[in-house]
Amino acid sequence: MNGDAREIHATASVVEPCVAAVGISKIYRGRAGEVVALKRASLSLFPGQMCALLGPSGSGKSTLLHILGLLDAPTSGRVVYDGADAPSPGGRAADAFRRTRIGFLFQSGNLVPVLSALENVEIPLLQSALSGAQRRERARSALAQVGLSHREHHRPAGLSGGEQQRVAAARALVAEPDIVLADEPTASLDAAAATRLLDCFATLQQGTRTAFLIATHDARVTERVDRCCHVCDGVLAE
View 1 (cartoon, rainbow, N blue to C red):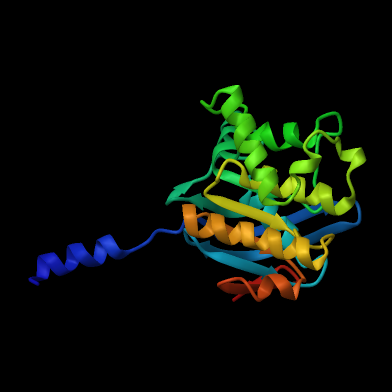
View 2: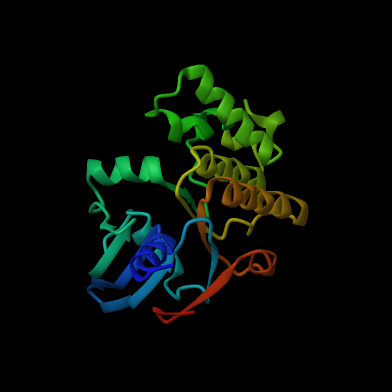
């Protein structure tokens, strides 16, 4: 292989991060003074990679997820997707970007109370080019993956906490996003449900090269990931 060919081959083999936090700091200012949630945190996550984000409560894990998910803006630093700056949170561009590229799994589930489990899972697909029948089929398939086909017509109030979290997980996965940001996704799940959810994560990771960043305290999660990062007092370290 000549020098030019070697250079072309090396360039082609470089994989760009699907998302990166670049020197992210977040400072909350109030009457009691400043609270520094993140201090120049940098993290790159690559396609098909599953990373656990570890640290005590209040360390900045959820803040980082919210910033990467374009739900909150950093005080300083950049959020980069596929080599380009992400849209600023709060606008239509950020909403559209998040709807098509990011799956978010909140601690509380954040299900719409007046919608059924099936309708909640279908939400990320509403602006897609899929027909109504195709959306429902995708939503049913996602519910089946988390073991809740028999609960598709139940509203959140008729579901247990663990079932609500599994519906929220199905909603996060249904559009096969580029990245899933999950905040304590197994906290309310028993062993069988947690294993099933992590199996769903692994299937999507391998099949579509979706990346996962999972804030967790759960050893069941850390045993299944490719890498772990730690946050303590706003400082991120691998």
